[in-house]
Image 1 (tube, chains in turn green, yellow):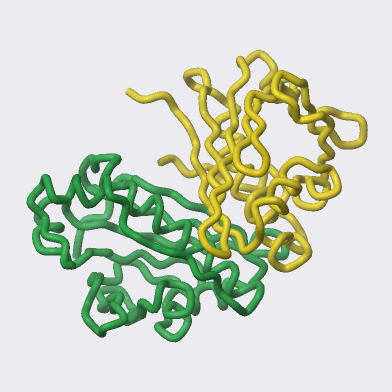
Image 2 (cartoon, rainbow over the protein chains, first blue to last red; image 1 turned 180 degrees about the horizontal axis):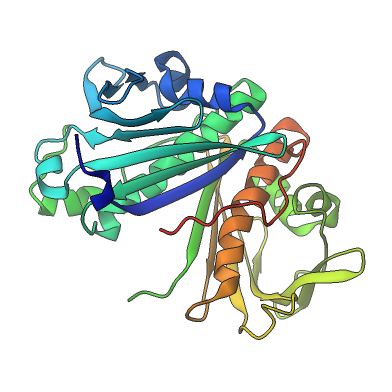
Length: 172
Length: 155
């Protein structure tokens, strides 16, 4: 198990959703839901501390793998969120992702906090800064309207170039 | 060290024209923006103010106005505890991506140690989540959390 105290927030995104904490929790942790709002990527989480976490690409391969670090349904989930690009974790260390789900009035405040154990270049963080708003905006649309938006998601060029400079291979 | 600033991105299923209208017309702002009306002609250099029940909440000048793509104004909160800070700046970029609009709100040019930065970091997610709901669902979130009911997250 990683030492979460060594990690500092690098990206924080808060969004309010007309839903219940239970539904938001389910949307964040189930493959059936996540495929709808997360570009057909399936979240699979063994919901206990030490349990396996993965995000499967549409072709079935592991895009992200990790471990459940904190699990307090339906309030808080922390996982290690390691993108399986060769060399990435070796160069950048593990990434921690925490979802805080709170009742706020009649709606839910969802806060995603990405944390890293070392300084990460802004060019590399541009990936998460682009990706999280798209994923979580779509999650909100799904829970409020029953349907999702078609958002074109591409890794930012500046991120790809920064990763390449570090010798990290990006699968085509 | 870079200047402190705040960037919020959201994606909304709407058109650039509707989003522009929602950002600039009181008919919309009262519905999603803590009940505030806005008064201005949105011409570059013109003053503007957000107000409710005769009390101004924030005022400033229009810096850029390029409907329906880009809007920027200075941000000078009217509450006594923030009044002595110099005005900051907020910029809205409306970027169509297929049938979806990417809205980028950048709030920057704060003075060092700004209290206003802390306030707006809590406020924008509420306002912009509510705006998205209004445009997609047809009504804002049922019961808004009050502006102060948002915990600070240091990034």
